[in-house]
Length: 283
Image (cartoon, rainbow, N blue to C red):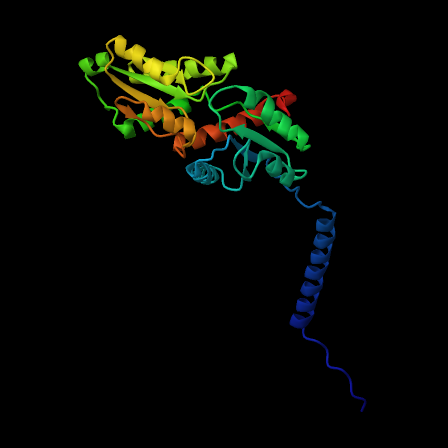
């Protein structure tokens, strides 16, 4: 008798057919997926380059570094760099050269328009061949006034002054100064915004290159019967001018703006504003 292969059970035949069908579906699906292009990668955002003036005061670099940390907390993943116009490293020319082909927005840590904003910063970026836009300076702006106001409160300005205190009080807004008339316009605008917040006169005055000087403004306010005069430091970081102006204060002087949270928000605001602006601002 010849041996024969026993027939496969119906269940085994059914399982083999199902496996074959699933393999066919899988192969067909894999072929279709190969035709689908991979998702496009979102381009990296332009770098935010903080442009500080620079100072021989070692506290200045520490202060600007702390401000950078606050900005990184606000915008995780955004590349944030630092460059100085002079006196400190890294210099702006070195920072932008290191960016290579990366586009960038240069945000001046300056509080008004002037020669640095209009000429030095765009020229330094162009010299390095960087694809960059230059944002406006940080002032005037309500967030700048918020930071100035908080620094005055920290220095001892009364939170709820009575009418008699308001009549005898005033503020000198101490800024670096510039020969550019637009710089004085911006500082006057900031002074008006701060005066509206405080309810007392705020007089802009300067450490150099413009009038009135801080001591002159203080004497003029005293002659008007304002015997409680504070100096509001309109400086990003400590330095010679900030120390000089604070030393002239007859009553109290606020600290430089430093890493105040409102200043960090203002830097991000300028960055985003510049990205949304027409390409005409490109350096």
